[in-house]
Structures are given as structure tokens and as C-alpha cells.
Amino acid sequence: MFALAPAIGLFVVYNWADGAVDENEPAPPPPSTVVAPPPFADPLATQMLSLRRFPAVLSREVNIAGFQESLVPFLGSINDRSCVAVSVDGVAVGVQNPDLAVIPASNEKLIVAAVALEVLGADTRLTTTVSAAAAPVDGLIAGDLYLVGGGDPLLSSDWYPTSNLERYPVTTPTSLDALANGVVAAGVTRVAGAVVGDGGRYDDEFFAPGWGIGVAGLEAGPYDALIANDSRVLGDDLRAADPNEGAAREFLRLLAERGITVEGGAAAGEAPPGAVALTSIDSAPVTSIVAEMLANSDNNTAELLVKEIGVQGEGVGSREAGLRVMAATLAGWGIDTTGVVLSDGSGLSLDNRLTCAVLLSVLQRFTPDSSFGRGLPVAGESGTLANIFNDHPIAGRLSGKTGTLTNPPFNADPPGVKALAGYVTVDGGSAIEYVLVLNGPTIADQSEYRPVWNALVDVLAGYPAGATPAELGPR
Image (cartoon, rainbow, N blue to C red):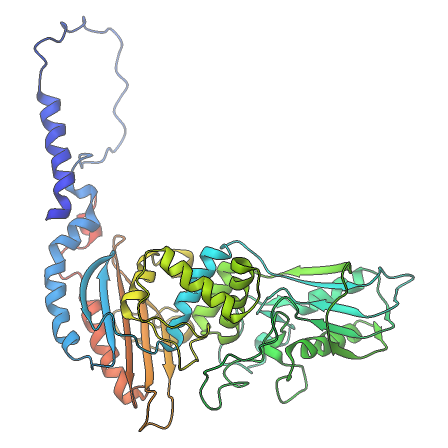
């Protein structure tokens, strides 16, 4: 009950002061003839300094010991290559190997999301621009038409979100078709040169190092500051080798559909200094981009956000710059980064290392209803958890970032990964923060990780065993 001491102390002082009389105080004034206003209708029955004004704190103090006890068997079941950490409203409940540096898989995206919201700003939008060396004359662009990327990972033709080419469709696409309409509105009817895709805002590293066999081009990449449809062009079986050239070809197709003649085809390049902007389109705010990344575990979005973090933090659109800013931001938040290795944004790199303590500290900076928390998949409802825990009482209450790496061969390091980290909401406003990162040779096999996940969720769903914050709130 130590956490309640300040409130109780104030309550005692309040009541003492209210009843005490100063022997030197003047005589009371004569009775007033002013009629007092009627009392408020339906006043709260709870006094202002009642403990019921602190329902989350009181519920936690009443229930936390039992929660800690129920968690002990689960903590003891975790292998020595894995970690777990649980807290309630930032108050530690139980940990196992919290400072062990583990491979986090897509839980890496939690770091990207948190830093992106901090460094880029929740309301920031990323702009894709169409420009030319000079404005059109009688509908003619005398040279090339430049499609200039601003780091928007969700730039999509209208056909793409419903194409079923990706397991999870883009949720807040930026319409490349609308941008093509803007070129028409600018009066362009013919381009004497080419459509040139310009991703010069970032470096030309299209894939991060450290990815496992068969990952590049399938799970993520190629990507650059200009990318459309995750580097897909309508009618092509494979992704474009250069995302800038691929986006230019897709834009060329859209312009042709609108009756604009382009004589020079499509290419990758950079717009000249002083190019004239003809039209542009903004992305959804960073809040929505982060939510799409978390809900869909979108690898390309994560990698582009890292580079944009580099642009804002160091003026350099590179993975290395973005990762330095991320590490510095964690340190600036007072988080101990001992053992942490940030190698990419997606979590596909086998070189990444995080601890459960770091991930829990990040979760504790936010709440389930924050811009960060609202982006997480919800058990039985959305994103990568849409079909998980559907029939469990925790469905609709648990949100979390999943993570998976198989890392074959199974008889050699690095180990496979299965991770889950996020929140469980409690009736009345409290929240559990939890992190579970499993590393092991075959841990990504459902027969191995699901019993562990289920055991954790059973314990989390049992909190609080006694009165909830809602039951202890003002009456």
C-alpha cells in the first residue's frame, strides 16, 4: 500500500485542517442574507479525496501479489535463450532473462514505430511530387517528367490493395492514380522525354544486410524513397529490380490510360535542381503509416521509416543514419541499451538484438489508446492477430506485435524466433504491458510456440482476480 501513502496523507491533512480552529482568528461575520444556489443535480457520492479517486492504483495494489504468484510457473517454463517481462501500468510484475539479448524478429518494428512517432511527428505526411525542368507549353513537356519520391511506402495504384498479391493489403494507400489525374489537371498532354523515377531522397541500398536465405525480394525489398505497389507493375510477374524504374513504368501506364503520350518510355534518375512542381500528393499521417506497419507487419514500410528517421535526425536518408537516431532516441529516453544491436527496421536481419527489458520500456512509454498502441493488431479482430485467440476470453482485449523467423537449417544457429509483445486492457482504464520473445531451433513451429503463447495469455487474462478499476471507481 506504499503507493497510496501520499493520497492517504493528503486526506488526513485535509480532514484535520477542515476541523481545526485558529485561536486567533476573528469572530465570524454576521449571517448572510444571500440565498445559496441549489445543489448540483445527482452529485457524486464519492468524496474528492476518497481512495475511489485512484481506482487503477487501488486495484493494482489489491491484485498485484496474486498476479505475480500466478505468473511464476510460466516464467519458470521459459528456456535460457528466451525472455519475458510483464508489468501493470508500468509497475513490474515478473521477468525472466529480461536483459538477455535475443533476436526479436518483427518486434524490431516496435522500436521503429516509437521513434518514428517521436522524431517524424504523428501528423507528418510524406509527399510524392511530379515535376519537370519547365512548365508545359501548349500541353507539351519538352524534356523528361520526374516522379519524385518522398519516402511514402504506401504509394499504390488503385488496383493494388485488392490484388491479393500481399497477405495483408495496404490499409491507408496513397493513390498513384490521383497523382496521374493531377498531371492531367496541370494541362500536360505529351512528354517529349521519359518518365523518370527519382528516389534520390534516400541512398540506393534496396535490401538490408543480414537477411536470411530467400528473404530479399520476397519478404521485403527492393525499396527506395520512390516505391509504388511494393515495386510491382501491373502485368509483371516479378517485382521490379529497381523500385524507381518500376514506379516510373507504372506511372507511365497510368498516364497512357489518361491519354498522355510519353515518347521516351520509363527510367530511373534524378530531377534537376530547380525543377518545376506540376502536382503532388501527400500520404496519410505518420500515425497511420505506423499503424499499417504494425498491423500488417509491413517490412518495406519499416525500412523506409528508418531511412526517413535518418533524414530528419541526421539529414541523411540511409539505414545506418536512421539506426543511429533510433539508438540515440532510446538512450535519450533513459533506456539501457546494453546488448542492443539495431541492424534494420523490419526485424528480418539475423544480426538484430533486443532485450525484453528494452521492449517493455518502450511499451511503457505509451498506452493501448495512444497513437502507438492503437496501431497494434488486436486478438481475434485485426492484422496479424485476426485469427489468433479468437475463442479466448482475451480476444478484443489483447493487442500485440507478432514476430516470426524460421532461420533454417534447424540444427544450427541462429535460432528461430517467435515473439509477441503489447498490451492487455483492463476494465476501468488499467493496462498490462507484456513482452515474450522466444528463441530456439524450431520455436517458430506452431506445435512449439502456441502452447507457450496460450500459457501466457491464460495468466494475463486472469488479471485482475479481484476488483477491477471500474468496480473501484467513483460512485
